[in-house]
Image (cartoon, rainbow, N blue to C red; front, side, top):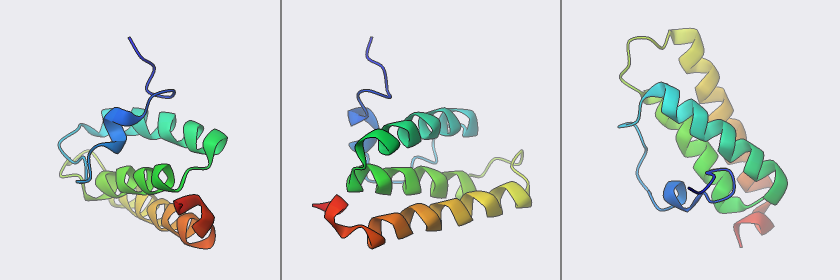
Amino acid sequence: MSNPAQDPSHILANDDLPVHLSPETLKQRLADLIRLAARQGSGPLTETVARHLQALYLHPSPRLDPVERAAYCRAAKHWRGLARVHPALMA
């Protein structure tokens, strides 16, 4: 079985927001993606982190409170800003 932190292809292949996943699954994938992005610094990976954060703040789960949603929204903006500030990552 492959480790998602080493092989994010199952995550990167999906261009849509993964809101069909549970918040718990999104959070686990997000942790793996952030660790991988810290090591690789990939632009597409940075955008995938932002998409997962966006999926969390738009998730229909009633268990996510407004403060938590706002934190995910701010984090998504931060990660998208990283991609803009470092355009070489997107090549």
